[in-house]
Length: 69
Image (cartoon, rainbow, N blue to C red):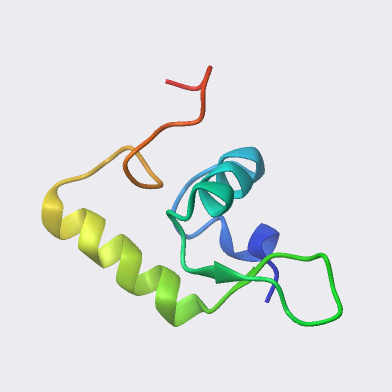
């Protein structure tokens, strides 16, 4: 499934999702023969569970999208 469809789960914007993909902070991949960014729902669910366990509330990982603090 495309990243745009999954980004709702972590509660981040499409722009933030793409930024975090480029930084390597999301478990995403590009399927062969496409320019789309995809992620497995299970991988995103595990990532969010880790954030919850760590008490994170800021969405996607170590850095925030510049201008979106």
